[in-house]
Length: 366
Image (cartoon, rainbow, N blue to C red; front, side, top):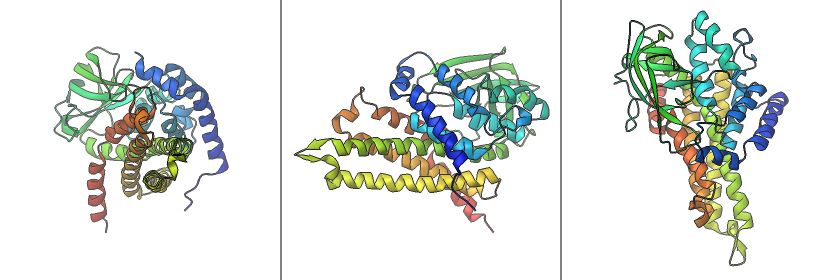
């Protein structure tokens, strides 16, 4: 069992970082954050040219056929850069849903376009902003038509394809969002560099993804895979927050000493360092389980999700505190990381949901 990455993996990671350092500075993130566009289309095209969307898609389906280890490392760089593109919705959720349960015809129709970045996908689960989705869902799929409302839907403003959880969670329906019977409504987002939307389905043409009645099982499997990939994005964001805070603590002086020399600051940063390293260990464990198809993924995904969520939130909060008063201002970038940390923390359900799932899965072990 090898938990590390080889030289080829690291070279791919360096290439992704070089592109993002050049094309996705925090000023670029802020321009999407404060502008009308739902994502950075130029960065999306540059990522597509690098093959990011098709890294884990088999060559037979139009992808590069590499694997999840490569995708994990790209995800870490996207998180480090706060990349304002819908890769998590389209790749971690949309493409993975099709790889899990798509028929040969569905795979042939959608995967090559998704892998090339020509089409963006998303997953629509929640129906109310004030409630994390359980399975009391009202959206109905019957006779090839979809009826209901989903909100908030990450990247629903720009996606062309959605996997919709319907019939109380028992059905996953595949629907093209540019067809008749679909209406989009942009929603305010805590992190405007990642858009949200409300999707209205009024008899929209749809088709079942996977076996009808198997939706809950498929969604659990999809979340486990996505949790590992999200964990790498969160890990990248957490490490960047820590790096920025340490750099500032070394250069900012008060009473003739760098603020990093004071125990109150030093201990904060040490605690964040421990949280980030714990998240890294669990993310690597998850990457191994995901890439090998191990049964350990059920446990590893929970551990990766929980520790990465806690690490990114802690790093973003403490990073803002270390920057002092300037960190609280609109002009400073610290709040961009805090907003992204908050958004990613709930996108697959909160950490407490994953903790309950972890307990149940451990208790069910023979």
